[in-house]
Amino acid sequence: MEYGGGQVVRLSRKGEYALRAMIVLAAEYGNGPIDSQTVADRERIPKKFLGQILLELKNAGILQSRRGPRGGYYMIRAPKDVTLAEVVRAIDGPLAPLSCVSKMAHERCPEEESCGLWAVMMDVRNAIARTLEGVTFEDICGGARK
Image (cartoon, rainbow, N blue to C red; front, side):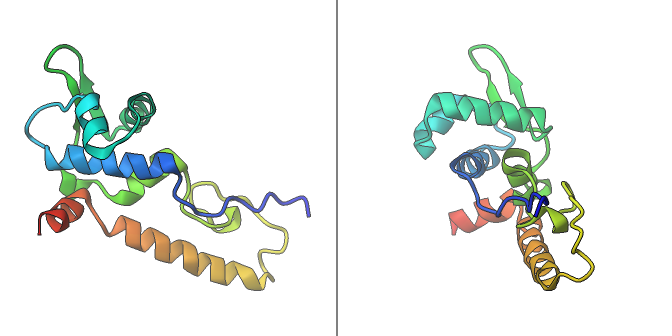
């Protein structure tokens, strides 16, 4: 079968670190930029790897940065307006377990019309998307404070 089949949804280490870094930035929202060393120390993330992640989140339009002694990264939008799905997609790509059910990276499969697996994988994709799109960083920070 020539069809690529897509990539199984699995949160990478990079994706996990991105979510953890975003939790720190969400908790500090409105307090000005947070330097990457502080985020790295709080979440035990290698600083060089974190730098790459923060740059990707900035390029995705989720974060902004400021240079200088009081510089660092901060969220562009309020934590209530940023979902886990946005961050996962920015770092790890589509949420779909197979590309034939992906909305972002759809790849047509010749057997799509008759494939018994397609409906199940679509349900999996929808459940993952519904869950991650339904949780904001405000939700996560609120839960962490309880």
